[in-house]
Amino acid sequence: MTFLLDTNVWLFGANDPDSLPEDIRTILDQRDAQFGLSAISLWEVGKKHQIGKLDLKQELATWLKGAVGAHIQVLPLTPEIVADAMSLPDFPVRDPADELVVATARVHKLTLLTTDTQLKAYRHARIQYFKPILKKT
Image 1 (tube, rainbow, N blue to C red):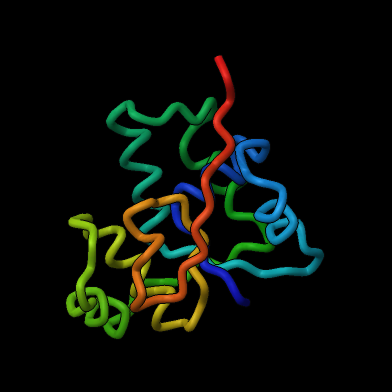
Image 2 (cartoon, rainbow, N blue to C red):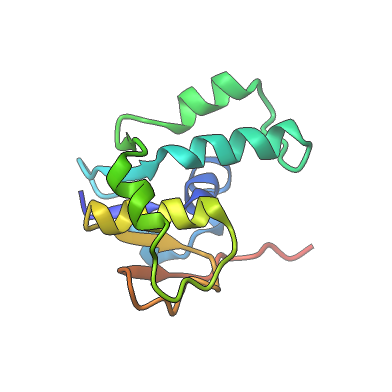
């Protein structure tokens, strides 16, 4: 396992793969590749759906089961991850879920694939930022 999927990358991959640039799709389409996903990402999606900010087009449990395929390993929150999240140096975001996602990447020594512009220059973790392809309306 080399990469941790940020919540938005996981969502794009599951709901709208065409919004991912070709180089990111190439990474995600690697045969037999395994990707990490922080357990907090499951909660983030569930919460956004619960409060009406995310339409999943199916019941939450069904969507989650389908979106966590065989190539995704959900990484639990551990005492080490929580401790690291509480002491991230110069962290640019005031979102506890982002702290936990970045700490998960650091503890597991994974590169975080993210679309979060606030994280792209964070030098205390391995970050691979990309800009999603926005559809013209």
